[in-house]
Image (tube, rainbow, N blue to C red):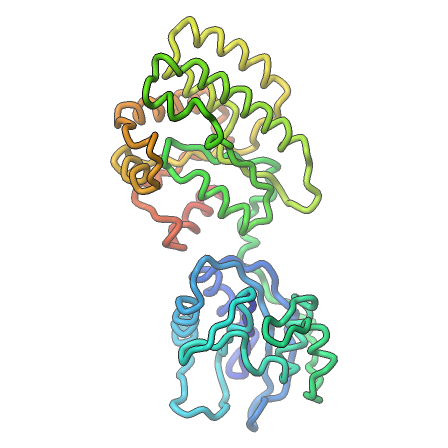
Amino acid sequence: MLLSLGSNQGNSFENLQNAIDEIFLKIGSVSQISPVYKTKSWGFEGEDFLNCVIAIQTRLAGETVIDLILEIEAALGRTRSTNSNYTNRIIDIDILFYGDKIYNSQKLEVPHPRLHLRNFVLFPLNDVATSYEHPILKKEIGQLLKETTDKESPEKQQRWLKNPQEVYNLSTYNYIAIEGNIGAGKTTLATMISEDFNAKLILERFKDNPFLPKFYEDQSRYAFPLEMSFLADRYQQLLDDIGQYDLFKDFMIGDYDCYKSLIFANITLTEEEYSLYKKLHGIMYREIARPDLYVYLYQNPERLLENIKKRGRTFEQDISENYLLKINKGYLNMMKNSSPDKIKIIDISELDFVQNRADYLSILNQINS
């Protein structure tokens, strides 16, 4: 999503910064911020404006975003006029584009219908999205800037706005593993972080395992072939994914670690089977890179069972609370023997980091602390 911000009242630069900070807190991650441009007021006689464009990643619908934008503007001191005339503004935030989506309602019109006519929008927009194609006009931003009839020439400022996302130094790690019990949300969190922080995503391919549904029907019979297949699959995947360095990603994040195999095998296998399994595990994973940071998402069993039921995988519906408690105990025992500075245990039993951005940022703060 691309947003245009402008201000010509009070400390305009500070107003822009405050707006970006609030957008980050309430709407989504900020991936790019254009230079700030000084422009004459457009459509009325007033003080000069400072304008910029930002690119954000959001999981919210356009209608929800516009509601939050209006709340942010009001919180920063803007009082909207009842007429349609242009006026001085302490802050103005407009949605320019939301991907290639088109909204045309009384509440929301996207793409912004007049963006191609205004250099105070086109100049900063061209800085962050010159090759972006207007979904209606079918022209790239760079081309729209060349064709605009607006004769005003915005003045680029030397002072840059700060990206609030930069306080999260996740890229100082080469490899982060998000772990947790069944239904804890580790895959969802790892995916969200990878999208917001340009990380290579490593996800466990458990859905392809033919022994998993059979295991939940008859654990004693299928435990050993299940754990052996997981051992081989996880080893091959980690070998491939970790070994293939991606120059275009800042770090790696996965929703499992190689020690997961030992934790589950210790619960499901007999003593003799586990002894053999542990030897094979040590041989196979000896050269596999280990995470720089290990994040364990704790949820109480009641919440886990709710999540498992909600996601609706038929073969998981008979998982017992006792089985989940054993898994949790296995993880905690493993972490007791790990370096404390590489472990983050985060209790998310009362959090909803998918629907509540404040909860998501709370988790990021704990990872980053």
